[in-house]
Length: 414
Image 1 (cartoon, rainbow, N blue to C red):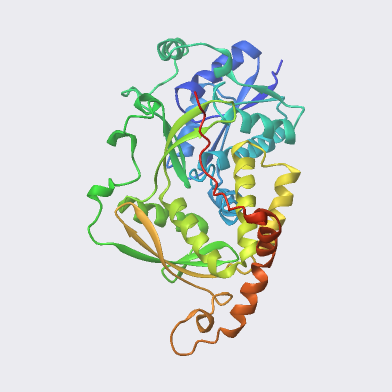
Image 2 (tube, rainbow, N blue to C red; image 1 turned 135 degrees about the horizontal axis):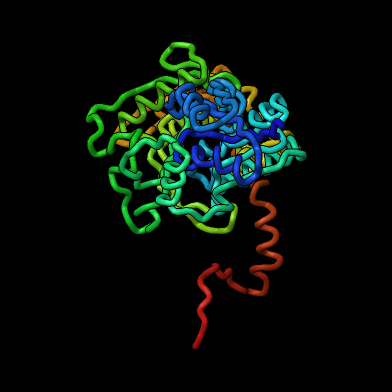
């Protein structure tokens, strides 16, 4: 009698390889392994073959790099979404896409469950589970790592018992996750926020001290908030990110050391490498300075924070997200132009920006010949601008000879 199926997010590592027979034994389910390429630099077809050898009844390998960039990365970039002002959300952006594709595979294979390898302490379990519950509430969710309490040695013994081929290599000092938009690194010595990250924690970026002594200059072309070209050449999103990661990493750009507030209520020290993300976010903000009005730019900062929280907290498929993105689309309609970026010793500095829709007028800003600003209008403007403060000060704050008290520290007497 045929067994029901479960779709497993399969990476080919020790944990997910062991899950294939374990789920069969524990839940009496046949495993369909699912592997997706988001630009993490692995051979997904080789991983697919390993899944079949490990005991999966079927395996699916899908290249979703373009889908990831166009439908997840670019909207987040347009929104200016940086969690707590530092984290470009690379891993967080990938999880809802993986979960969505797993739901599709589950429907195609008539599976009754989905499974992932997340722990009970991290954020990814939330992103997966909430997406599953939203898109396919009828699917059962299995998270083996939340159930078993195995050590690495116990997992290796289980793998040996079931003839699962595990690559013998030195155990990684850190927990790593990566896709085309960024690399995350945690655990080990990084768990002490006082300790400087060791060189071994980095893989994408040159130490800024050892970076080239001559800066590199690049020009990024934008259309309605999306990057579409580099140095005069039109590029699709995947190619553009790959080039920026390479050149940015060479110059030490993109290192982020962040003690962040996890959704589950703990603080976690995370190390990120995201050369392309750091360059693009900086360039995008600077292009906005000439293309957005003052109130629009100010309000956009609130939207950026909310958008980042939505992504980080696993709520991508929410109505609130759709509502916010409608604002972002309208807000970005004139964010079109060029940014020139200087890459030098770990820094990405925008040194030029221009747009056909720029609100910057040199004729109004200049102090040189050609100044068209109406200086005579300034006196009346200042009079009206300060009228409310002046009125209140003389009728309340300075009445009866009282002086104006400056705010200061409150001293508590013992």
